[in-house]
Amino acid sequence: MSPAGPGPVGGARITYLDNAATAPLRPEATDAMAPFSAGRFANPSGAHRLARDARQALEEARDEVAAFTGSDPKAVVFTSGGTESDNLAIIGSLAALPARAAPPVVVCSAIEHDAVLETCRAAAAGRTAAPAVELRLAPVDALGVLDLDALAGLLDERVALISVMAANNEVGAIQPLGAVAALARELSPEALLHTDAVQAAAFFDLAPLLEGYDLVTVSAHKLGGPKGAGALVARGVPLVPLAFGGGQEQERRSGTQGVAGAVGMAAAMAAARASRPSEGSRVARLRDTLRDGLLGAVPDTIATSLGAPTLPGHCHVRFPGIEQEELLVLLDDAGVCASAGSACASGALEASHVLLAMGVDERDARTGVRFSLGWASDEADVAHALAAVAPAVARLRGAA
Image (tube, rainbow, N blue to C red):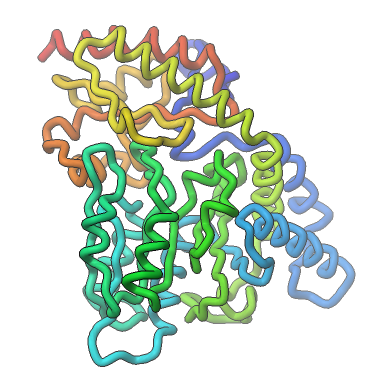
């Protein structure tokens, strides 16, 4: 069932296929959060009974995040979301390093989310609270998977931090985290390992996936929790806080915690855990139906990352001869919500850095569209999208 329901297009159906940008709120999260917007409103740092009640709920949410990531609850730092968690992981850990004679080296993949990539670039330019670093970008292959041989060539004893996402937010390519950890242990044994697991969290059991990783980023709204809630898992890693104040979160992130958001995130994580692996298999079947239907109905369609392991909900395709912005407008008019890639880049005219890193030329990179499915997607959503895309592409090609 499409979560959006009837919309502004004459009361017609609106199909939501932008779950990688944000997933609709799960009912479990809605129900869990409701009391903390009313009677259970207290500040969890207080000493009275209402504060103790809020603190208990916060710690129960922390326990769920810890179980979800296979971590100790003491490692969980509640944040405002994935971007803050990525920033705290990178800047906070680098700022806590002992002084070195030579600038420490940071290695990240060329397809990281901007929350990682731009933070690493800022650190390299000396624009953060951490000492300036040398940044090395690890390339990916044509399917969007990290080139392990190239990564090995970038690793040495100077590397202080390695950041590789669990799965790419645009094309959905799953990254070889286990192999990255093995290379790090061999070639850069002192380096901290960070992964942005925001996209992978909706479908995968993170505990075995994250073995050997020191810093893990998760966010609530990608898996059916509320926006504005996230966590950084810091496993025995000292962190210099980005925000100073009351010393909440064991002095790693000051500020009154958003109890409702943390509780909603925990509820969404519990629901996601309970529905695995059936939900992933169901969504993958829908994705395959959509992708195969597009390949059959729209001439010259290119399925990006076809042949690589990808997230169940990601269907990224390219339609040569069209402009993605124009296609997205026509799809929106038809009641189909999709995107060109990262939601943070909506409205930007630049070609996707992910596709460029995969070797796609700039013109072709501007033809890509991401259809992303999630827990609320169903067969009717796929059918609606298939009915809308083919005539829209044909119209644009005919007008070219």
